[in-house]
Image (cartoon, rainbow, N blue to C red; front, side):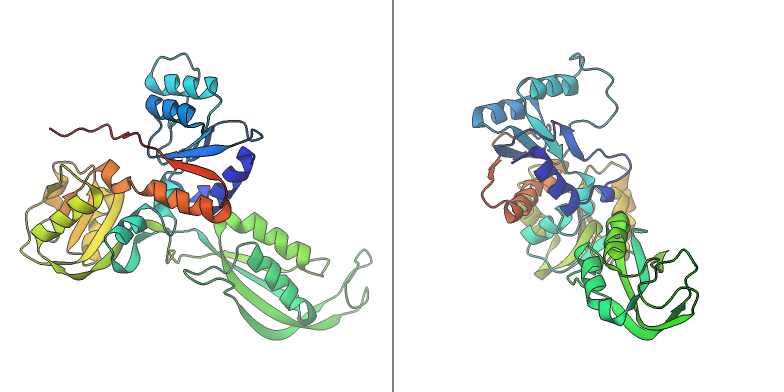
Length: 364
């Protein structure tokens, strides 16, 4: 398969539009037309990962953390990133990364953490904002099914666990074409009244071009009337972090032991005990301390994330148990998410989980 096929699929399945402004998800290294034989899944791209890819015969590396973050003006081996890039190019190995968009999309890193902890009633902690549009258009009754089907197939009408979500109401539209018009129904220069359906649905803003193209191509009118409105609604499924509930109450010590076992965390740091049992849990893989207030507001008894600074532990104020389980440890299962996504679309494609530990942190 060509590199562009798997890149296009991942770009759409874990939308690049979801990534944070500082991020650099997507294709890092490689020619879109190159043939890909197998892929190596990893958290980070290191020199050892390139070696593993060469030995295992993988000419594509799919990572969580991007190899390239800042601008690169030359590749001369001045730093580790440039040396890794040169090594990948020399061995004709492509690199694709799915970072904060993998954190944000429904089914992402924090949801995987919740799955490992067997949490129920899982909900997004900090919903993605300003990414929804409302589409309203008017369709002659005889074409309503065709137009709605095209719009839904283009990705509109998704609401959480449901798709093909829309609303229609009946009414009468009017129009009069001038001498240059080519009306689908009615005559030039005459006012025409037509039974139409007002159709409404929602869509993610990054799908706007695709959905409108589908609308225009399927609609019979020469001039298609439609409106697009930006919604203030937050997403019900996409966003950073999540909350969920344990099957039973645990003491704070029991919960710390559970985190240690499930994520193989060997150096857990935590705030002062609150004296409460743990039932509702907030999670954010990687560095999620910016969501502490959201976690407290959610009513969570504990918040698990990584990369917590000294003073942040004071901010918990004994309102919940704040736990630093490690950046790598809380994101280690991101490769499983990518594996499941790719195998679903390309069931015969060869995928390997890296056996190289790329965690740069060691514990004494």
